[in-house]
Amino acid sequence: MSQRRVDVLVVGAGPAGSIAAMVLARAGASVALVDKARFPREKACGDFIGPRGLQVLADLDLAEPPGLDVGDMIVVGPTGRRVLLPCFDGTTYPGRARAVPRTVFDDALRTAALEAGAYGYEGRADRPLEAGTGIEGFVVTADGVDIELRADFVIGADGSTSHVAASAGLVDEQRVLWGFAVRAYLEQLVPLPAITLWEPTRWQAFPGYGWIFPGPDGTANVGLGIGTRADRRAGAKAVRALPAYLEHLVHLGLLDRVPTPPTKKLGGWLKMGMVGTTPAAGRVLLVGDAAGLVNPLQGEGIAQAMTSGRAAAEAVLGHPGRAAEHYRSALIGAHLPYQRVTAAGHAALVGRPRAVSALGRVITAPVLGKALSGGWGIFWNELLDGAAPGSARRVATASTWFARAVTSRTDVSRWFADTLERTPDGSL
Ligand SMILES: Cc1cc2nc3c(=O)[nH]c(=O)nc-3n(C[C@H](O)[C@H](O)[C@H](O)COP(=O)(O)OP(=O)(O)OC[C@H]3O[C@@H](n4cnc5c(N)ncnc54)[C@H](O)[C@@H]3O)c2cc1C
Image 1 (cartoon, rainbow, N blue to C red):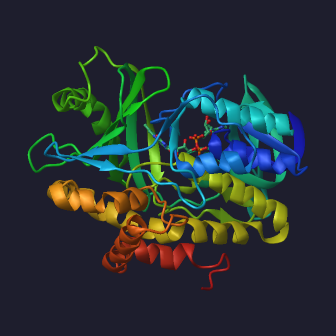
Image 2: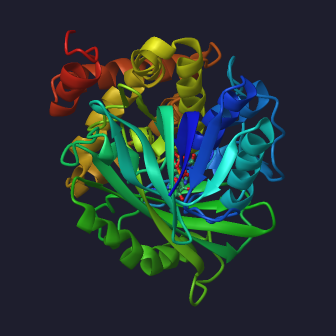
């Protein structure tokens, strides 16, 4: 079996892994970037890169791939009532997102990492290679040929069902807030992106939400996502419900007709709210979905993948002796204030369809919905940090304080206090 030693082994060349590999390689580190897929590859996604993801591209001098800029969004409540969520420039991010098919976006980031000097491997990281008490690499299998890749650091960027995280014992499966979402591409012009809070039966909300987003070339990306907490068998409900959801979009006037069958249907798991995953220990650092960074309210994860990939690379470069600790602190600072309250809220709402229905009606109610919409757009898109001063930021701040008060004694909050906020040696 052939062998190679590098400074950093990055497993997974999605946005998290490619950004990490690129930052490391630009700084002169030797990096192996391994992915089991042949690029360009498909990835189930709504294809929206949020404002913070676009900011990472700008910060790293990476061109935005061809796509479609999107700003304001409509939210359609369970009764069909619509609220416009306005999009504002922040002080640290632009006031827009961008629709780019993941086949294009992920390939561009991986290419940038390889151009920066990372070695690309097409193969599956399989058997972990132990050193002392930790993992120092993987046997990577490609086309039936094995290679041993060893490194000073292993960055697990291998998505929500991360093999690196499981191999390093960093996931408590019963604690994780799992979600599953399925998307399809349709021929449809979509003037404004729409999120729908759907009630298949009156006062019995679907346990997630659906969307119809514009794509860059006159296609629409349509999908449905579901929260399942630890029950991963429940994910199939989203796939089964997709045809009825498409009918619902026609009923709402957001889709001209139901295509038969919807094209390019693809589903995937989301690991949300950071709960249940220890993001780093020893020489293993988890980034993006592997670290469970997906927003528990709306399923966004690309921007978090990119920012965490960069943070992990900077921790390795800047603090090689204590990279795990520094990376954990960076994640806690960037995400915990938001994830703590929204993960607890999400956990409380899964399995309570009446409560979800009630909430959907309140936030799309005629006067209240409009009054809250600016702040809501900031709050639920995790954009409070860096939001420009004004009434929308005040509403988002008040919502965060309210949510923190309501969720402070939950099981989820206790997990954060007992696990994530402890230093790696166990002391607080
Ligand atoms: C249906 C759906 C819609 C979504 N819509 C949006 C959206 O519109 N906007 C948004 O921001 N987020 C969205 N998300 C979330 C988003 O897709 C993820 O948060 C994002 O892809 C995370 O990036 P990542 O780099 O961490 O992981 P991934 O993009 O999942 O990349 C992981 C990579 O690891 C590779 N890999 C896995 N295991 C191994 C192994 N053992 N060895 C080698 N390689 C391996 C995989 O092939 C893959 O390329 C959506 C998710 C779903 C499922």
